[in-house]
Length: 307
Image (spheres, rainbow, N blue to C red):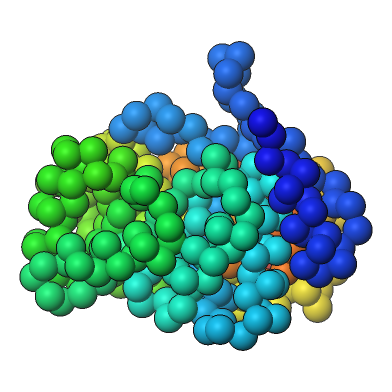
């Protein structure tokens, strides 16, 4: 039984939205992948190339209006193909807000749940269980060691949990371009499925070592801060969209920035955060169309630097 009408009813009922032109679910059942899907190297499973972050945007506490808006964003995301929703114990009330939304929506078949362990306590199992209860999922698709905090302790535990079937994938994260040397050592020496890092049109250090290493080691890459927490899109919205944007299938600067990221062959999924339903759908559409070549990517980078 399909749950699509229920999600659309939530979208329209929560915010009084009109009927949305939503993307179809991408399917690989016939042996061909949608252009909006990317392969996880360690399993060959395919997930949508555009996910959803929750840092700041879903940290809304118990505010009923903001919770309704967060639920509408998550409902639109799932209706538009779904994929990875990423959170952390560090993100305030975000985990509870996500769980509240998932309970209201009542359908998670398009969800790829990703969270983190973030504690200096040697035993992170209590935090992991609290996180799971907040989300209301039976098990996570992906658990990551957040910002490499006490990774020597937590990563072996995640490996054991995966072996017992208590989660599907494991990974480590960093952001703001920090601790890249240590991250590279972990990638080279430990059996991780995912790595999460900062990468965008201006922050390109990951291209030098981390992204090539991910391809070499068969590690999926999650890109955080694709818009520099909104600073890039805010700055660029004052500038006219270049005429060549239509040639790459971009309708906005946000799509241009995402297409730049998704064109790198090591990138699996990017996780922009938003509080706006229209932006969710706009971000999702950035994964459609042909993959940009190197020349197109460098034209985007040059245009952004010039502005």
